[in-house]
Image (tube, rainbow, N blue to C red; front, side, top):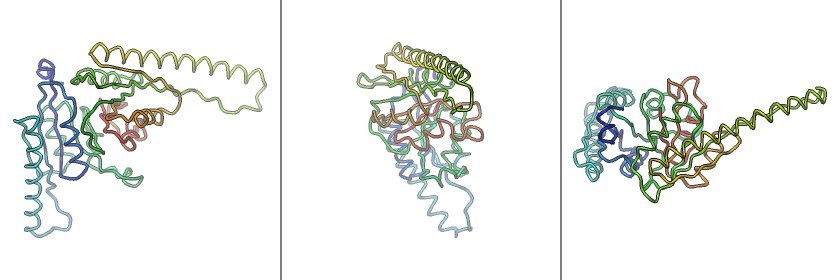
Length: 298
């Protein structure tokens, strides 16, 4: 993040919109989000320059005007919270336009809607939201369902550098006395497969070693959760911790759904985002399945 942003305590936020329901949800959520005071916001409408099938010029003109109307509407919405917010239209492939604008703006966070639905749509790697999340070098807030206020936040931690980055970013958000953050740390225990043919003494040794390792893992999980909660409390947040055992994604989503969270924050594992080897990670699964907006931090 830029040094000037650190001194002011504010973020530079780029909000991408195309007028779709998902983009409208992202816009409304961005307006309700507890950005630090002094944050600057800019909007972007990406108008694809290449047209499949080569429609007539009058069709292209009509669509271009529609994008301009989308920009005007977004500008009005943002002006209620940030009077000097600009919204521009870029004639470029959407993901490239968003990432390019974020770089020029030195954005700390990108906000956009998630339009994937069902298994088939999740396999479409060319989707704009998935492409941006995979390529961005800054946190991305992805919204499927808009929220009018953010009072219950869940943050998943695992001791990784990006999880620590997520905690640090969360600590900088604007605090509301009524907001509670649940720090979730899931311990994935070692499960010993059935070894019926092994001698009893060997089975006993394997089970004993697995139990010791699981005890150590659980202890480390508690330390990770306590460290994150302590950092957030020092920043003024009300926190609670949940240390669970099981599948990381399932347990994390269970907390989000059970607590009716308005926001889920996770760290992306690895330097190259969520594509390739990281497909199927907790962050990717959260994007696909979380009912709450997801802030992916790297």
